Image 1 (tube, one colour):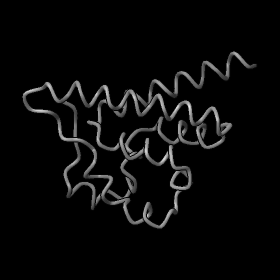
Image 2 (tube, one colour):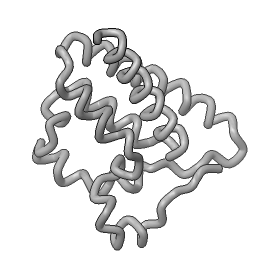
Image 3 (cartoon, helix red, strand yellow):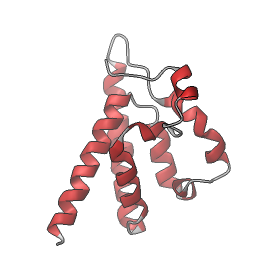
Length: 127
């Protein structure tokens, strides 16, 4: 099982104001996605949603599935309801972020690391 944050850690740790800030790759990945062509971003969000669904189905088969990072996301519901984050304004990206927030932390981290590596490889090819 991967590491999960306790509710107390979430409230007291000012370094992690958003549920996804626990991983250094996330900021880079989100910045890259934000600057993408909307059509390309939409395709990536479709893939992320599909991958997340597959991972969730896999965890359903476990005897005791790992607690998701969803509890951490509760702290960000205010921003989401007011559309304060850039991805709240993009329906598909917002939905992808919501479904990824229900993943165990290790799975979310793996997705972010994979995307970061993919984006770096794409940048190197375009140089």
